[in-house]
Length: 226
Image (cartoon, rainbow, N blue to C red; front, side, top):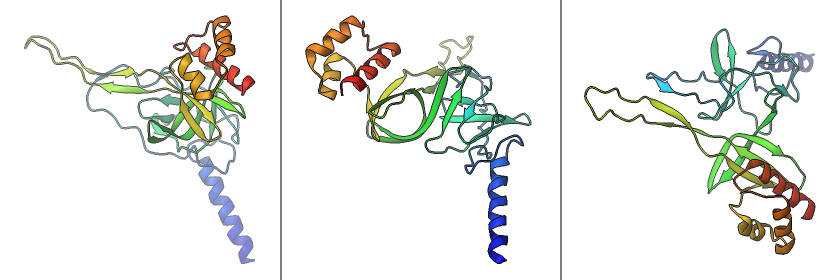
């Protein structure tokens, strides 16, 4: 009898956790939608926004959750997903490996542990290619820059402002993330490719290492030849 009572209690606690933040959230064993910290309110005026997709909250689809989950938006300055409840904005709780599809944006974000330039990160990456061999991800980042002081006592100081950093592209092999090579020479060396075959492909495909569509083509090529 005691075992039955304990089981019912644990089940009810898990169910409550899954429901916090929105009564329409379907049951899930995760606590993604429990209310984490509220984003801090800046005490001074900042120009721009920290949201690469706009400041609106968009519909999402998440495996393991129902259709009526909260709308979300990605804060690229804080590297957090946000949702709104009763006019208050909260961060979600990050869960390793969770995939968040934004149908209207045609983008999927995945929370991942990864290492870039020797630094460990746990945050959101945009999934561009998912493959058992090589996958491609993009990290979006927005930084906060200081506004400049007016050189004149009669002028107005510029406000601090959000500025978009250059997107960082990462290739994943097994559990290892590799910073995307900067040119054809580095790409060939990194993945030990046949030089003449790759150069022929790059020429016919008009590969440009500064364009996302070309990076997608390159990883598709990599998955075919390796």
